[in-house]
Length: 285
Image (cartoon, rainbow, N blue to C red; front, side, top):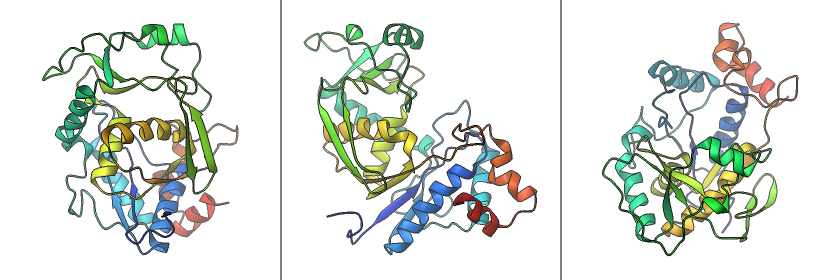
């Protein structure tokens, strides 16, 4: 059954409070809001605040204000509660730990002491649309070697071992059929970091499953992440949601928007006196 026919559509907004939301975020979140509304579905807000070094409480406050000002609302979230609380990722570590332990029991992960510099030197530049280089096969431990136990406090990176040369597909409701080859287009990826923090990939998969998300709407820069998450869903015996990847917004130089583009932040445009309608028109110009 497609997401367009799903009788219990559940979508989500998943902002990360590491800076002010920009126009690209706003367009993606508005798209998620409209898709949930068109299906008479439920929209949740999840606060992706795992990055404790960069997340700030004032960005959380501004995030709520800016999204409501733009005209968005949701039925579940940290500010309104709901049946799948907590909705702050920083409060959900035990959920991610259980998933990590399952991957460990299945012998699908391994500890990695290689630095990012090691990986970059051996693998070369990352793919254009992805920030993580393909993990070099020569760094992989023998899959038959004894796997060390998970410490109660993790101080080493743990990676997911991806299948060699498996062709993966998914149908995107905006961009059509997408395809990638594991081990070639992307490699073994982090599921838990040496600062005892779950990776984005693992946390996202666990939350989307446990919060019963039926469609994930997000930016096209995360397509490669979608393939990683498909493998995680399969390994954890989770259902995989549908996907809708929005085309990225670019600045005047053709560079995709980031939180450093403060002049294109919702907060800045509000302070300049723009109305929500003017911002929404700018989003889809």
